[in-house]
Image (cartoon, rainbow, N blue to C red; front, side, top):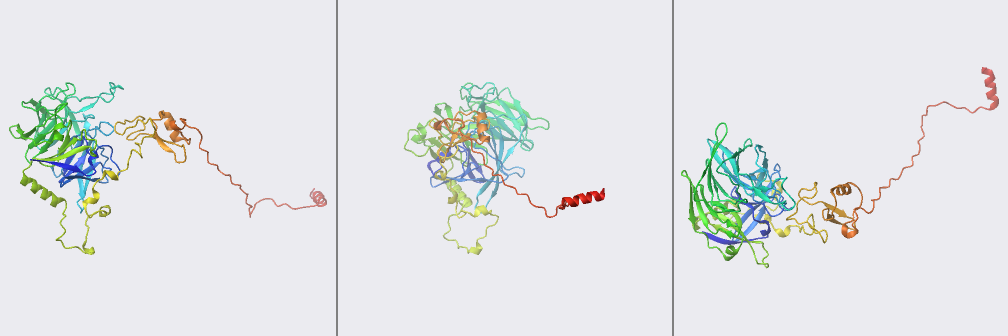
Amino acid sequence: MTLQPLTPVNCAGLLQPGCSLLQLDGEILLFGQKGWPKRSCPTGVFGIRLRHGEMKLRAISFSNDSCYLPPLRCPAVCRLDPYDGLPESYLFHGGRTPNNEISSSLYLLTMDSRGCNRKLTLRCREKELVGEVPGARYGHAMTIIQSRGKTACVMFGGRSYMPAGERTTERWNSVIDCPPQVFLFDLEFGCSSAHVLPELSDGQSFHVALAREDCVYFIGGHSITSDSRPPRLFRLRVELLQGSPLLSCEVLESGLSISSAIVTRTGPSHRYIVLGGYQSDSQKRMECSTIILDEKGIHIEHLDPPQWTQDIIHSRTWFGGSAGDGCILLGVPTEGRPSQPDVHYFYHISFQQAKESSEEEGTQACSQESTDYDNSTPLEDSEELYFGREPHELENSSDDEGDIYNEEDEEDESQTGYWIKCCLSCQVDPNTWEPYYSTELHRPAMIFCSKGEGGHWVHAQCMELSETLLVKLSQGGKKYFCLDHGGLPFQEMTPPRQVISLKRTPMKMKNRNGALMFKISPSKKSFFKKLFD
């Protein structure tokens, strides 16, 4: 067991409590970054690279047929091992967006391809559920069970906002426990069903859920109703019969009083290590436990924790996730250290033996990339063949160092973009902003002030504009002046475009059809008149 401090290289601001760590195709991925994705990584998914005590991030791209995956905090994450010819993948449901909106969507994340330089490309699809669909929530758990040759997904717990009819201005962001319903749905057809069991009488969130075959174990969790973390332990058995599924629940003893714990698997068997979490709102759980699932049931054993540092002991909060079999990435805030540039301290905890750890590091180094080129024979230009590589992958393909994420490369959105301080009384905060107008979705509505030569942009909400006036100004050609420069909704009309009328000269017709006229003297006129009369 080792506890190694990590130095984040220009990426500490992306990791936050509620983020998720994934292991896909031998790589550790970060999902649920802080804030909305930026230009350097529009997907919001990063590959984590741990080497020589440093932590670096690399942007991960999606395939062209992928859907948009928002950065979600505290979603239900479930790993799907390869089965029936399907590749390994991850399921995401719910979670909170940077705008504090709670999602109700279900996403499936799989590996799409790898280039010759081993750059990983993912594919994300949104799965639609029919029937009794679970609502928007976060802090819940989702697991995969197998029964009678069938596979299904089990979901339980979570929190959500109060119903729309009960939300008030003072309690607009108040959350409550979701009803204690167990949702069961299959991944092939998306049929979902809700089940109520008498043993599950109270809602709970941020609990541990572990599955083995047709049984799911719910351990610990927090209840908002009672504001407690009772040592609960439930065993849910699901039988996927031909007609409708059969669910049964049993209350077991010797549970754990824990919430928001970090779970890592120690191998192919159902052996897990539980670390971290909270025993109460002001007390962290500094102990570790080993959980073993077998044919007889569940076994919870005590495990000696690592030698915690003083920063970990005195921190009020901590977070993290599994960084591979028997490994955990842990983050604690830098409380009381204003001189520290990073937001969190990070540690890599390994529960493996020293020999196993060194063998795994050597295997990962060989599988991901090779840096020993001293003894290799250099290739001629004609011998450097690139099979199956896309044109955009040829750029910066010499080494992975060119793809390392750097926060300093990002634009400062406090000076440019939607999150500027538009005026002295600007109240728009990117961390707490919520849509104000019906036309807003992910960014605040802005309007251009025509004061001066260059002008500037201001938030419509800070200017106290009504939605009707905002739409009117956006559709018309009137100039607007902000509150600091006159405070007039519109002061002058944009001069209309002057259209110069063209003078048309009639064209003479060459072949004009008409009566022929002859000039005749008056005497000849009288002569012809007498002649024909």
